Image (cartoon, rainbow, N blue to C red; front, side, top):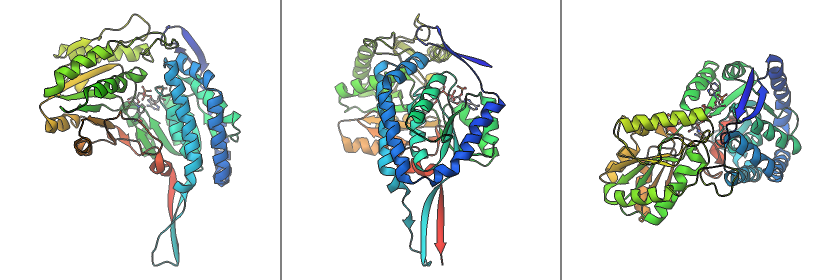
Length: 453
Ligand code: NAP
């Protein structure tokens, strides 16, 4: 089957490629199967040197990588360059820190010697999304490779050239044959790959819908999986927030990457006493964003990645307005192929898509609340539990509120972001398992106890 990708800004055909047939899939899995034992036995220092070389290649090829990302999913040039640097930094970080995370831990028992070791699981299938087409892959891959696993990637079908470009980077860095492979396959073929005996575990970053299907397939085979799914993060503005800082960060938290970020602020939960002032300034600041060609320096709001995603976002906006939400800004599709302007909905209430569902695009939902307690209740009134942030001049108060948020990542007076040093992941329908830091590298290891009597 031929898959065509479309440039999100121009609407022009970008690239056509064929899905792999059974023989091509077998070749990738056989290479991974052959490589697994050798890679697991490769000394950690050697794996670290390769990770550093990968970081070097990412930096050396950043111009090409940026152009591919922008053409395939519409990312602003400067956002793409920052993403590539973040990937290179993650390679350096794990090259430096993996030995510490994987060190054997002596445990005092009645044995003459007992300890815990972290052994690789084997080949991990990574199913990845298009929104951070390089970072999502490296967030999983850098720790997984350092732990001694090999990987095969099934990337989102609208970013096939990003997948191939990642493979080129790894090859240029000298990664041995089979340690990383790319599968250009559809979702049915992915289900077959999950069943393959050479696949030891699965990781998905993607939607709740994909999570249900992949977790069911992995569960059927009793294979370990990590699920990094959607979110509807609350951005809680308390009455003592620093308005200048809060408004500036609210714009970045909602509209970076055209709002297509799992940990973007999606629901702005604002205490009544400051709501009018916050909303007025938020609308004023968001109105300055310029939607346009993502290659141009002057563009500050990227198009969405695909027209069907833009249309689905607009359906959610329309349905919310029909149920009583008020459009304060935008809320009508742009004339460009997949563009949607910076949009703000006020008066968002339970039952509306903007309250209940993830808005994966540049639309902010304002939810007005009486006080701190109601803010916490509304922030937690969601089926998701990925991230959340609290904005207040009183850091101790912010911390108290952050601790009450039912989510995996809570920030005070800062935008929720992933950081290699901190574990990242969600609860509830945002998934399970963790990436990054020590928790992330341990996910795809056999945590093995050794007891010598
Ligand atoms: P998606 O439609 O779920 O796609 C993600 C990946 O899953 C793609 O490779 C897709 O392949 C594949 N896929 C979808 N259904 C599948 C199935 N039944 N079996 C096997 N593979 C399947 O999500 P998306 O639209 O690309 O990404 C947006 C979503 O990801 C949002 O909900 C966002 O919040 C979430 N996300 C979460 C995190 C996090 O860290 N928690 C980070 C980024 C994004 P095809 O493209 O071929 O369908």
